[in-house]
Amino acid sequence: MKYTQLGRTGLKVSRLVLGTMNFGPQTDEADSHTIMDAALDAGVNFFDTANAYGWGANKGRTEEIIGNWFAKGGDRRDKTVLATKMYANMALDDGPAWPNHDKLSAVNIRRSVDASLKRLKTDRIDVYQFHHVDRATPFDEIWQAIDVLIQQGKILYVGSSNFPGYKIAQANELAARRGGTIGLVSEQCLYNLAERRAEMEVIPAAQEYGLGVIPWSPLYGGLLGGILKKEATSGRRAGGRAADALADPASRAKIQAYEDLLDKHGIEPGEAALAWLLTRPGVTGPIVGPRTADQLASALRAVELELSEELLTGLDEIFPGPGPAPEAFAW
View 1 (tube, rainbow, N blue to C red):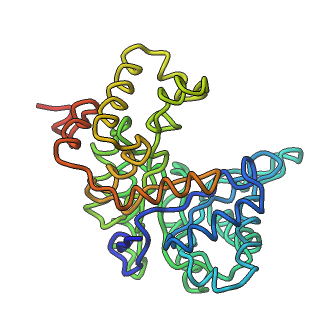
View 2: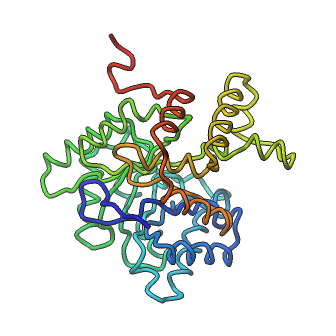
């Protein structure tokens, strides 16, 4: 496994991030533990989750699965850089719609940290992430709450997810003015070969302020994972975002050209999509969310995969990026 520092911090993390969103809803606890053990054995030390994972009536279940894995011992917790997220409403779905159970108020930040620590069976969260912007809560309030939690040792670093570039700038400028507040050190954003809008402003802002970029959905819901080949060989039909994209003839043609190009180079599409992200400026490592140990093994191969200049040029021709702002939309 290869490692890099998370943004401007001294924290060393693996170039792949183990995403755990499937743990609970699609992968049972025993198999989830097997995958986490395999990831740690392979050198993956950066695990990402969120308080809402498990979804619906099972919100929090994924953190519980990870906590039970930590409780097995064997230095699992000390070897893991643990990241979780908060923002979603964690009140019981069948209960009253009480206010202050979601978003980024100081009240909910404190409540959410304590609840996650209990589920995760740990005394600290290494990277605590805001899952979405909260337009109603000023950053003065947010940073005041975070400062207290850092002083208490409950969290060490703070990251964002799904933030636009201007919010990254706003958050870190205010943190700098306050003094003593570390500010955001990472941004978790939607970024892959087929969805490159983050290159316009989000990634440049992250680089300017020293945030590590952690792309989510690196295979774009399976669209970049060899979906047409699977459709032809197994009859397996795409669903969700992938099905919507393939219903458009132009999008389907792009995916076909992508798979044909990688077939020519003898590379698996899913591994190429991950390897491409690892070549991108500012990227710490993409989040991979395996449902099985075999899917994890495929993702691990991407770290060692070297993409030729010819192949990189071909990928850019199929999926051209928007270019940086403001040139992307102005003269």
